[in-house]
Image 1 (cartoon, helix red, strand yellow):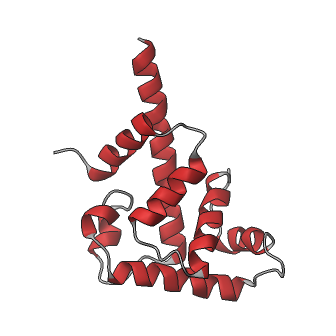
Image 2: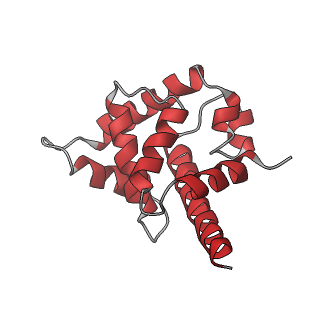
Length: 144
């Protein structure tokens, strides 16, 4: 049986263009049932995109600072942290495990508590990297 993360990454690699990172992030957030009607959804969307472009270790404070600067008035770290945490918690309470298994490591899903904001963002960022690696493999396969 194929690992669910690998299977999902391969599926997206064969169905989504590599430059559609923002669309894939939206698809993941929808798939995980992050509530779209709360501020945390938008903050997560931006945080994951910014974190995916970061070449250093992902630091929640730096990412949330960058996201906060996108809004007028600027959103404080505390408000963003609370909104993102609430969005993840809501989705976690109504989660469908096989959907979460597509993007997050098994050890995070097996816990009783939801992943922290940083764990969630990092897991999605690392999934995106894996998806793009699969896309490269898919592209190389097609040219041979």
